[in-house]
Amino acid sequence: MNALRWVTRITSTDSQDRRMFLEALAYLAWARLLILLPFQKYARLLGQPMSETSHETEQRNKEFATRVSSAIRRAGRLSPLDTRCLVRAIAAMKMLKRRRIESTLYLGTAKDKDGRMIAHAWLRCGNLYVTGAEEMRGFTVVGKFARHIIPAEHEGSQ
Image 1 (cartoon, rainbow, N blue to C red):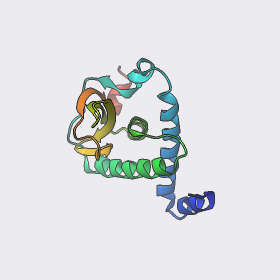
Image 2 (tube, rainbow, N blue to C red; image 1 turned 90 degrees about the vertical axis):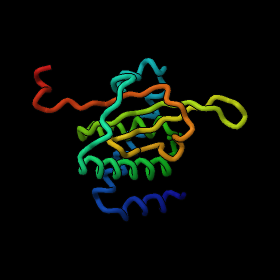
Image 3 (cartoon, rainbow, N blue to C red; image 1 turned 180 degrees about the vertical axis):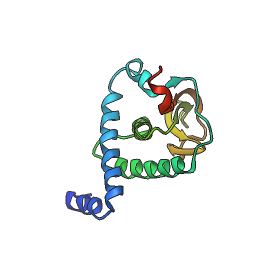
Image 4 (tube, helix red, strand yellow; image 1 turned 60 degrees about the vertical axis):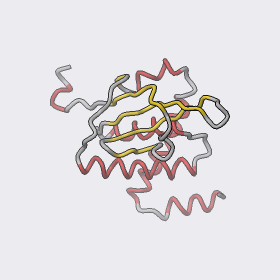
């Protein structure tokens, strides 16, 4: 897509969607840089290992997570960076965390048709799969990270 068409598409959306799209682009770039590090260096940023958040969430959180999903998908398609599944899941998780919305990031493995090991990452908020839902079937979960949100009234006491 040429630069003029790209700018036209961004500026033609409403301001709230535009901000969300630009935020998604920024977090995709941040996540892309993050995964250049060894996994052990950034794993602690993903949340509590081998834990999950609830499959239930408030309707407003679900609606926001749907908007995050759309923004990540759009920004990922237009980004010049390689924004595969792990990058998208981390970026979406960060956007949800910023709004104090819980999520769980899953890591899975499978074998492709040639018998080679492949990996996939996806993000869930409540019962909504924010990223990676299309490809997650057929993968065995080998890791999960829960991003729990501490209620505001308890933050100062811990």
